[in-house]
Image 1 (spheres, rainbow, N blue to C red):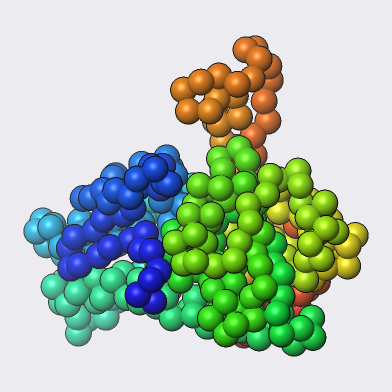
Image 2 (tube, rainbow, N blue to C red):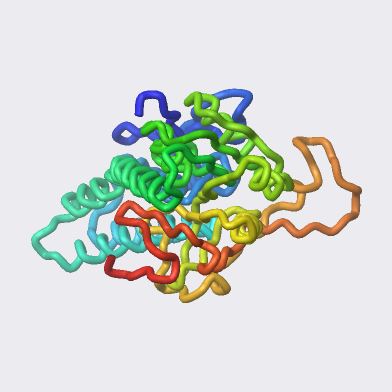
Length: 353
């Protein structure tokens, strides 16, 4: 873990994040002093990745709670927590982790209200303990995801050295410090089972070329960057063994919302008879949504497509369509969904697992 980048730094009551808008040119940590700071950092994609969004959101509430002294009753505490968390959920609505984290914390606050043995100060400490545990829990979950995924890929390919293609950024910069899909790749590298990894640039926001490539170089993994429209050619040319991506939300039937461009990679993988995996914490599975058609898809600003930095690169006046995510049908996820609990067939998810 020592060589891994940290996107989130937290000490009791003090939160800093690595501003990912500045990568790879510079590494600068910025303070998050309150929930409003976190909302803007998430919305502006200074921090991104479904797990990291939830962690930063919840830790920003912990920062505020540690500063607050005007919560004289458990009812006021509950109202305060609920209002702040529901506001954070609106920052990026496709990623389910923030929503589920908010629901869990609001339920805890509600339970504490009904427990007459708990005073207001005790309820506040219980909520803080819950929020601040998320960082360590996420790292433990990611390590388990990495190990399960690496073992499954080696077993299903029957190879001791594999070539992997990945999309967007799912590493330390998207989580608490190890990664989901990139965590699986890390685990393959750690065990000597990674021959090479190919990462897409991930247009239009270039998370692959700016962030994933940065992590791969940082950790000295054998890696090559490709443009998004080179994926099919790369699959054939380099004999890719598996594609592994992350997830912002998984529906109950296994349909998965992830960064735009994931769906086409799954179609290409099927055409080339390549295993296709999704890696995500179990909390990314939304059993309240039955299929991917019901997952809300965020639309991003048109300027991400029409400009590179401040320079316009598209014809002025052209209409744009810029969804941040697409949905991959469960039947295309041939390798499985890798969680911290196990690797599941995409169409066989069980709520109580």
